[in-house]
Amino acid sequence: MLAASHHYFQKASDVLDLSDNLRDILLTPFRVVKVDLVTEDDNGDLLHHMGYRVQHNRARGPMKGGLRYHPTMDEEHATALANLMTWKTAVVDVPFGGAKGGIDCDPAKLTERELAGITRRFVEQVKEVIGPTIDIPAPDVNTNAKVMGWIMDDYSKYYGFSPGVVTGKPLELFGSPGREEATGRGVMYCLEQALSDMGKSFSDITVAVQGFGNVGSHAARLIAEQGAKIVAVADHLGGVQKADGLDIPSLIEYVTNNKERSVKGYPDADAFDNSEIVTWDADVFVPAALEEVITKDNAGDVRAKIVVEGANGPTTPEADEILHKNGVLVIPDILANAGGVTVSYFEWAQNIQQFRWELDRITDELSKKMRTAYASVRDVAKERKVDMRTAAFVLAITRVGKAATSRYHSLRGVKF
Ligand code: NAD
Image (cartoon, rainbow, N blue to C red):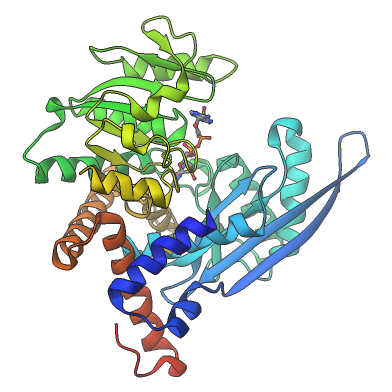
């Protein structure tokens, strides 16, 4: 994944004609933190994990990005995702840099008490390098509002009341209304803009969605509410399809109430093998689950005319070329899934102001941010005659570069 994000960065840097030296400066993380986490399980035996926090770039503000709890979490993964955060925050123009981190644990194999213990040990180890004006973690894969609540609580023990140290907190603990659905809502706004440019509306289209967790389920619900038909949904256990359109609220209820939290077995639709979702016969495909699902092997068979990347890194560089050649419009992750970090910014702003915004205000501001970002990326794409992903990177690198050159004396004379 690091290779893919570097590839897209280099492609945009070629468009901007950046020197090798400057590319190197913009790609190198500001700080890489790796910590040893020794805790006890519920029986008093030792648990041993590694924690990571990669702080990529802080030219545009405090660094921002999720914490992922997954057995495959490592420095390279955190670095790739931290990189993407720098460009994502710049594309939607929120005043943050980029960071990412996590712990190489499997929450499914830990009790809540054990998970809380590991999280608190992580805070103890990284507390000097995070904070509301330094680096603000948020939920990512396998972390949630509860974990953010533990982090806020622990950090506040050392530094006093500090709700702005993390975002994605529970609503009762200084979280923001609208944060949970924000990424899915951003996906919907991007699709709305793309359709409008093509002279189409939601009622003209069918949509296939991969992943029915936070991003996929909210995106599907909001897109269906606009009048589109969601004809297929797949998750880790299976897929369900209905040519007339799935009843998304009912599917959400089914998934919420089954133990495996899967669409598999949903009675009011036909089942299919989840591997078929990428090439489903629908106008739009929303990958909202995993990395690298559109590859050189299946990209040529993608039937959608629009791909909206709800997930991070769902398309490999080779697949990206094939989609572009075939005239598929790809709305890239650093734009399409930036709704989450945008509402995280609103949450942080509310925490700093100690003033709660109403949901209407959040939705309104998110809509403005996403529409403006989409229009800016589209304008760069037209002006530079490049695809939307390259345009998003060009826009982001330019914004980060401008901030860095205004800030650091050593970069005087470099033009963006
Ligand atoms: P989640 O854990 O809530 O949901 C993940 C979904 O993916 C689940 O429905 C799961 O069943 C499905 N899935 C897993 N393996 C699969 C497989 N092999 N085939 C099909 N589906 C599979 O996670 P999420 O928060 O919705 O995140 C999804 C993606 O979006 C990740 O790439 C994440 O980094 C990215 N993202 C999330 C947010 C956010 O605010 N949650 C913001 C930006 C980007």
